[in-house]
Amino acid sequence: QVQLMESGGGLVHPGGSLRLSCTASGSTFVNTWRWYRQATGKERELVAGITRGGVTSYGDSAQGRFTISTDNAKSTVFLQMYNLSPDDTAVYYCYARIPTTSGRDLIVWGQGTPVNVFS
Image (cartoon, rainbow, N blue to C red):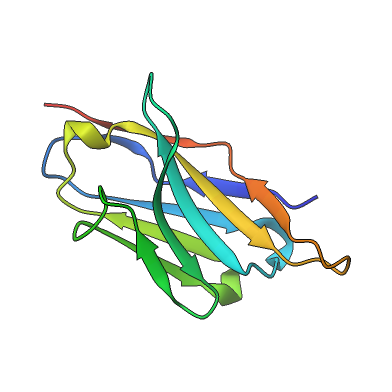
């Protein structure tokens, strides 16, 4: 059973930065990584995604402020966040799409790491 371990969330003032990390157990081969977030009372939204080949995509809220990257050798994805605002307060979830021998990809979610931006 593949598990995703997230870290890096916490408390930060507006304008501050945080770097989230997510590592898949067992040196897992991951095809696609994504970060989602969910604020209280809102639906989960896509923040950023990256393929194994390094193709990135960003949600509107992340454009120009967040950067997603990976260390494939360590089965780890990062989300560097700059210029945070209270609107970025949410629980951030890591997502991994993993190929299997059955031909059907396995989707795995992390447990979530909270980010709280406050004055």
